[in-house]
Image (cartoon, rainbow, N blue to C red):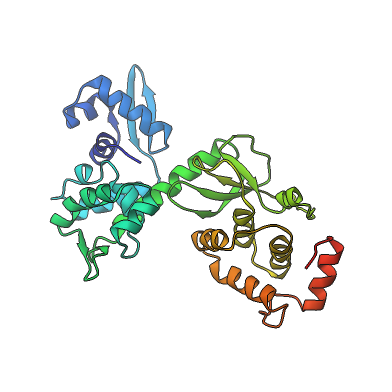
Length: 307
């Protein structure tokens, strides 16, 4: 997410400095430092202004930088730029709770060997430890490291969507993906349309509101019905939405294991379990947000869905 040089520049910026002053503080060339500042300005982490022929720069007001500053000031004896280089920030993103190397590798999309290699220096300095069952966890006092990684990812996501629109709400996010609600159409290929509008792809034309929903992902290009169902429940898990998801599950060939995997990813697995219990028992077991079976039969008939 950030290179060692970028982290070093961010931790060396105190107040407003000229690029030349920063280069001196970093003991790097002016051209190298200028490139660093250009990249950091593009990501919204620093701001620059011209004063005559001199370019001056300072940290932006991004919350992630406040967290980074707190870490570097509280533990000034630690070389944070070195520790946070490579895949460290990606891995620390998922250290909000103890996780095994296998789980960290899967979530951060890196090899297990990379997880061990990345966390070894942090473990050596007492920032990370391993539990009795081998999971990695942050030591007391360093929980802020995961908060910083998550806030940095959130900042990047905001920058990404703000290139398209100023009016939006991020509904869910992970390290490299996020689900966003907006009022305008986004044509960028990495913003995949989802939400009520997409039910018509499966012969279920729902009445959509003015809101539009997108999954931002550079790793995914197609919206599966399992993803659509999960997204809908993130957007709104109310009675109407759950009924629409029941229609989708009844009408489309859904892979149950894949749906449960997607639901777990988006934090709606309990709701999906309730939906399947409802369908498997023909409504005999239902939560308060699910319709009476007779009412659902009428809805299914209206949309020509065979139960």
